[in-house]
Image (tube, rainbow, N blue to C red):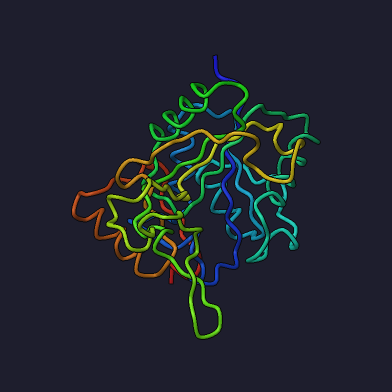
Length: 255
């Protein structure tokens, strides 16, 4: 039997790189709809919640079946606001309604190809890691290795990472000779709710490994990635979760 769990989908209105990103149309539906659909498709959540500072986004989220229990405070909806602020806010609102969960998952709208099966696999990874593990986070193999990265100091540079003594420097090695490094992607994370109380982060002690597979970890963070997502769908290279509702697009997309 699964522990009580809630899906949290962040969707603030003020995206700088892609204005209106969370409700921009992709394959006929607003981007946020696919994360809501994936949450329901997984069948592991008691509730699916969208945290937003926009009534328009809230209306769209409710159309696709999510709840929006109160708008996010402005101070937790800036471009520099850490996740802990909005997560703490929405978990607090739900607790005031006597709704408590052992697990929460963050499903960002920018990952339209993450599915219910992806979420179930990640939850299995957390379960396998044991109760002392605070969370699980999706990662992918790093293509630009930090061993080949530099920081500038005036007119000179120095390696970002400390170099091994009496060995070939990391920056002068072939990629395959470098230690494996994994970079987090934004497709999902699942954490035990107690980490919010026990610390200032949303990861907690011990983060379980979860490798996103293929398009699952694809993220739309720049305008050209919207075009790439549309191309992938048209070419049959990636498939977002299916949606039963009629399309409801933002006002600017419906004109």
